[in-house]
Length: 150
Ligand SMILES: [Zn+2]
Ligand SMILES: [Zn+2]
Ligand SMILES: [Zn+2]
Image (cartoon, rainbow, N blue to C red; front, side, top):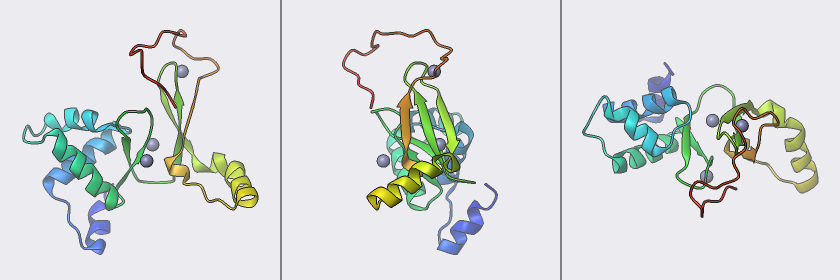
């Protein structure tokens, strides 16, 4: 994360303290929804509200410092962009998120390229399913009734 500023300077941007605070929160949390980011930054600054968080997350994504993925059908989840690209596995039973290096999708990606002439955005990919040996007992009831998973 130390090269944030250098990257931004090259692009002609600078990180305001507020943006830096929000970027730091995303980085610490690993995968965070706007609400989770707000809860995290509130410990440092009570001046930040949810619309500031949404706006700042959009700016940080435009700057290429974070990106979003869809881990539920509610607000997108953000993660910091560093190192190699990863995609996500989301367990529907225990809701755990597993990050998998894009390397592991190589065969799938080359098949999509060759057979469909399609270049997938692997970093935006989430595979929903269940752990074959999930630590949580299987719960068939839906906590919110109308909620659906992808
Ligand atoms: Zn999206
Ligand atoms: Zn991620
Ligand atoms: Zn699980």
